[in-house]
Image 1 (cartoon, rainbow over the protein chains, first blue to last red):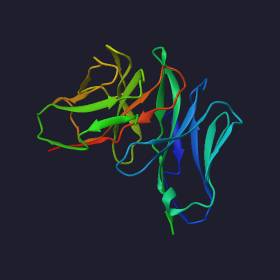
Image 2 (image 1 turned 60 degrees about the vertical axis):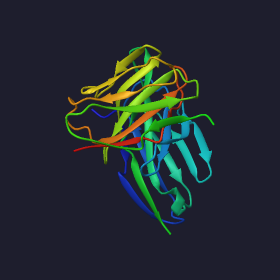
Image 3 (image 1 turned 90 degrees about the horizontal axis):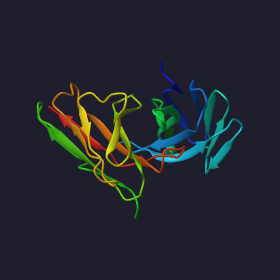
Length: 112
Length: 113
């Protein structure tokens, strides 16, 4: 059973066309939700951490929000360089430690 | 510069051979992780270590082995028992056992034929 579900799997946008990516989770007692960006053939790069419902964080054209059941990554006026796979992860308490569990990601392509 | 290094970037092996992937970090992080990534899949946890000389199995540990003899190093061995070893392997680290983000290495793409 997936604990982290990301949608859509793939998203194509025109430059300047704003949209949102979704990350829904089913873990109880959330201990942090993380967004990462991954370029092809490279390791993920950390973007944001959200800890509690109502929290928001921004970085350039990206804004992450969190509710009790899901998180959104809003992309405002995207540019081609925003093309990447965006990964969401939640902390799951296992064996005395918080272990990140990842969704499958959303592949974003922004056309010029 | 602090960071995580993985070597080599590309690795080719014949079926039936064991192969070891290197992961080194100079971030002074306690926890280290190995993930496997296949096309269209998220990151799946192979092994993790919260402290030197201790490690735990992740979701897909079968056919893999690790060691953690030094804080800076967490090598992963892909054994011949791993039925489908061709994949992109990512190493990560984070500080402590709490709610902190992970830092990832550049990855090693392993191809077994």
